[in-house]
Amino acid sequence: MAKEVIKTRPPREKAFLVGVEFYKQNNLLTLNDSLEELRLLADTAGLDIVGLETQKRDKPHQKTFIGSGKADEIKSLADEVDAQIILFDDELSPRHQRELEKLFGEDIRVLDRTALILDIFAQHASTSEGSLQVELAQYEYRLPRLTRAWTHLARQAGGGAGRTGSAGGVGLRGPGETQLEVDRRDIHRRIDHLKRELDKVRAHRQRHRAQRKRSRIPIVALVGYTNAGKSTLLNSLASSDVYVADQLFATLDPTTRRVELPDGKPVLITDTVGFIQKLPTMLVAAFRATLEEIAEADLLLHVLDITHLNVHAQAEAVHQTLAEIEADHIPILTALNKIDNLHDPGAAREAMDEFPNAVATSALMNEGINDLLRAVQEQLFEMYTPLEVVLPYKEGKLISLFHTQGEVERIEHGGKGVMIQGRIPGRLVAEFSAYLKQQTST
Image (cartoon, rainbow, N blue to C red; front, top):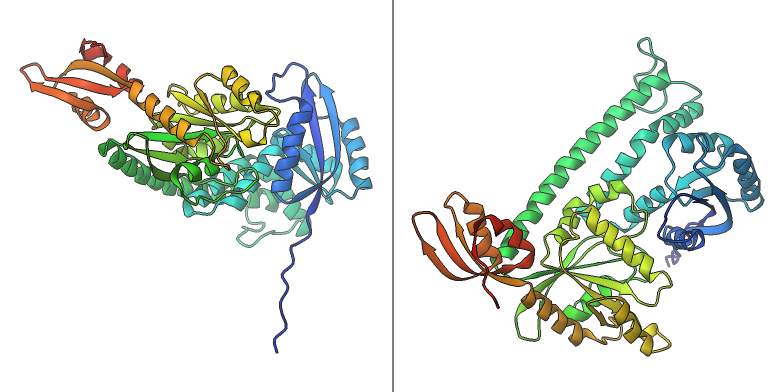
């Protein structure tokens, strides 16, 4: 009789957190709140927090970010609790990381917030697209930090040839320098390959978006801080089964569902990756194909966890990211989510006064969903602007845009061009401003 195999999880690594508050830096969260968020990120990544140290400075220390004295103090504290990782709440420059690794020694790894988020994304990437995006971001992050990686390997190899594929000691350069150049070339080639593959993904998405536009079905993109409840809300709106977990960045890949509005008209609702303060720039760049789903939407549905103590800071982080991806011009409807967790039901009404154009919801308990759908319907209807334009025949793209994105009520072909009368989404009015014949009233 075969013995039952019991699977065990590998032991979680111990991490010591370090947070620095710079007097002249305006952050969305306080130092304590930011460290609490880092603690949640670390837990999501599979780390146990065994200690914490903070510091206040005018600016980062040029060599070690926190200064050698503070670094020695943190090293002693980390040794006392057997920490294997020292985790910084800010992104460290390659030089800062290299110098800190020297001070902390080989037994302790140095990670920053960016590396941690990249690791979480790598764990949660469940599709080939997500894996490509995360791998690209990781290589972009690692490339300028490659020097330390090679010196570590050189020590292991006793200063010899190092890894397989090394050019050994051939030439006038030392073996470490030669291997470093080989590594850099390999990474550059891999980055170029990943970008080509992601360009294919981007083109594929554009074709799908073009098909959706031709169907004239409005597109609503769910946006929000990570763990605000976007996926749960999509499930509630569409009666679907999108993966949901009470953790940061549970969903990376966009999911689109067809939803029927109260008047019977369909709308496409897309769930997207959650935002966070200090979102690594290379992640935004790598996920551009996914984030274009947001920039191409007719309406943004901003999901807020109304019970979170830092709800206003989280909302600001979302707006900053929308501006970064050039999607801040799109109209926004806000869903004040998780009202079932409020002790005072009146707090939801007060919150609606704080956030304009908002609807109180509980995606988990299916509360406020009908009100939200009615609000989406009103927003989409109000966003269609009546206008009349005369478009020159050479402006084929604008003529096509009016047909695919708008509602054509009357069309006439004349000697100077095509006269089109109808309604288009408000976000597209500027595209036609040069050819506006007359603005009609509703």
